[in-house]
Length: 158
Image 1 (tube, rainbow, N blue to C red):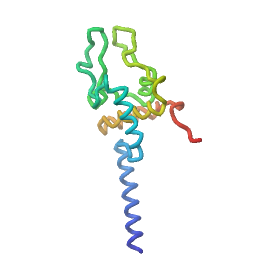
Image 2 (cartoon, rainbow, N blue to C red):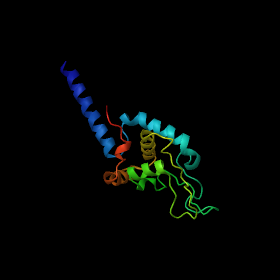
Image 3 (tube, rainbow, N blue to C red):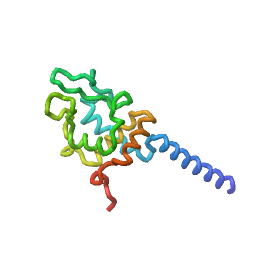
Image 4 (cartoon, rainbow, N blue to C red):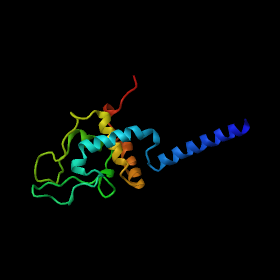
């Protein structure tokens, strides 16, 4: 009986340390898996056609195209998505985006607030975080401390 309790206590300690270590490194925990899967599905359906199935972005994304617009950037480590807070990324997905450097006035990133639920927008933003390095996730988490997801996008328990 004593061995069983020792085993259970050891397992619990290792589990807590493992989860804490994963969170400190900015990795999603296993509790986030369903939301990350949902975010990946939303990404593939609505975002991949421009940003690439692996978040690689369009070719020459840093140079204006023939319309005077910057193509869709990558969402992986080589892009700049990780430099923005949760609030900013949520807003870009919800309201769309026109890069200030573009020579046209149209939204080059369409608005999805009429298409996606707030939870789907959060899920896709959280999925993007899986494409970043540990250091980039830490930076983005720091940015998000002062600018988290909007309150209206967070589900409240009933």
